[in-house]
Image (tube, rainbow, N blue to C red):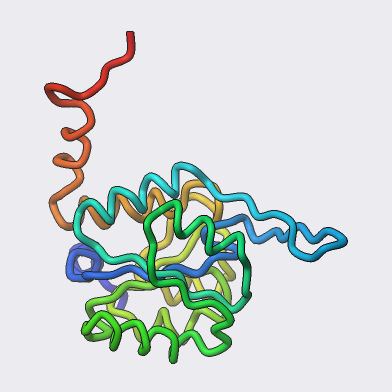
Length: 185
């Protein structure tokens, strides 16, 4: 039996932390490799702002990725994400390590991914999210699927869904549009 939207919102509202895959989730999945090795990944500023909104709302953020990349460390630092687990071939073990570090149960943590390697962690997490262009098996097992592809606003969608599920979306918007907020000329 498929979960109702109410059940999915309850799962999203219950998480205290969100772990994210990188390649294909925070990026479009392309990796540019130059003669010196990995040269570039493209990240969405909208996704970054969505993660900032989640952090401001009190969620703890983490990255769990199978690859190792200085670029990921740099982006995580820019976003204030202090827990970065790289080289995680077993993402479920990494999720369990994260839960122990944060003193949270699995059902208090969400996981967003796009490919089969993300499934063990997604299926163990309390809330599983996928990007629109995730592999079909991943989308089928996610509680929530973005309408946007990885690296193109999917995580911003996810952030707004989580905030809305927690009843915190309007307050986040009001902080930027209310009295004292900057307005365009």
